[in-house]
Image (tube, helix red, strand yellow):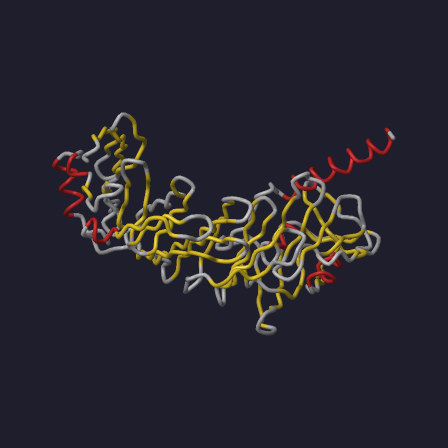
Amino acid sequence: MEKLKSLKSYKIAGAAALALTLGLTPISGLFPGSTPSAFAAESQKDNTKTSWDLELQNAPFKKNGVLFVPVKELSEYLDLHITLTSNKKYVYINSPLESVRIAPGQSKAVNAQGTTISLGAAPVVKKGVTYVPASLLTKSFGIPIKWNGKKTISLQGSKQYVSSSINGMVFWLNRDNATLLTGQAGSVPRSTGKVEIENIDWIGMKPRKINASSYVVDIWNSHGEPHIHETDVRVLLNKGKIVKQGTTHFSNFSGIRTNSNVNGFKGNVAIMDGSTLQLVHPTGKVVKTYDLEAITGVEDDFVVEAIENDFLLVRPYIKSTLFIVHPTAKKSVLIYPELLDENAKKLIEEYPPNEMGYVGDALSYAGYKNQELTFTFNHPILSSNSTFTYKLPF
């Protein structure tokens, strides 16, 4: 009995070591848009698969006639996403069409259908890098790999999706048709519907779990040349289907560092769609709607930076100046004129918002206590770094 216990501990520890060499956490994700250091020579094979010649950072190798490849590095080029089980016992290699479970010291894998796959050898950790037999990728994902010597390989695969995960739930967004898929690692993901996004280019996404039935997926995309057009989408999923989503657009000519929308308020999800803010129950039911264009008098898309019982803070993208909004009455107040000196106000009002260096009002919300809000002011042109308190105006 003691021997079995020791063996189990060894396997779990081995899996944890494998995960560390992969650079994994249970919520790890790979975000497209980054440029890998290796070169890739590409020739189109068909509509979904491409032939690649890759020079890898971590050289493949053969052992006892079995070709081993660095699985995490390869996943950056392919529609593969790697996750670790919560007990750190197994690692899943996922794709939009398949999922395979591997474990250290085991020369067999198990796919989403429960079929055992012989690998010919167990995964190997070499110099801190985890390698899997190339046959695993060929048999399970239809990715043939040929080693050309040293660090170069030829393979055939696709990079049609952007992926991310949380707590073992994997999300896939199709770059061509914006279909969002999701499924637990170890299963084949299913379509949740289409995301309202176009011109997908430099894109990333981050999922967040609301409850057992609901998730939020935040998606951001930069496109155009030189990628100054920004789109943010928040998607609410309930029971595996898209039940609500909102999209904002911003042509960021000046390079303003925009903030993210707050998650929500009192269990409801905050969803911005242009200038309309909706507080949405996790099931998709709209609880409250704010027409920020009508309330502030500004025609623009907005970001919502704070929601409290007594107020909301919202910011239009182009001018990037904070408004405080009454939570029930349809009224708002522009904040910076009451806080900043004449030099700062003149700069905000006269500096063209479409030129480099424009940062809006440079105010950041820092907290709320005893009917007073705290803001920090950090303006790069004025070389000013201050803290202000602001009395609730309602």
